[in-house]
Length: 64
Image (cartoon, rainbow, N blue to C red; front, top):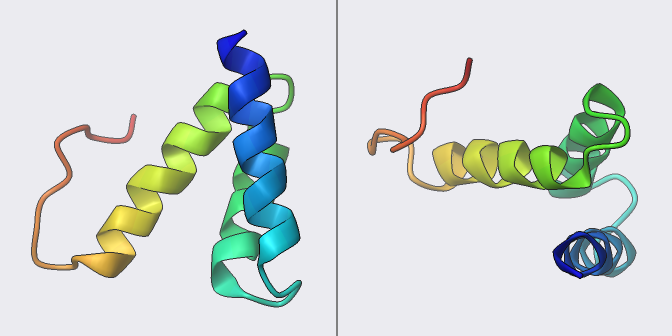
């Protein structure tokens, strides 16, 4: 159930953004880097997006 919600959210983001937008391109890149793991791709996308939005705040979860 949660996986379907994540997939629906990803599809909403992809369909609602310009094909050349940085947000969409980052999400697509994370999906390619985490095939079969949409939850991980979305998490990485959100963490990266938060760093782009607030460059002076530290991320509570470090990338490994």
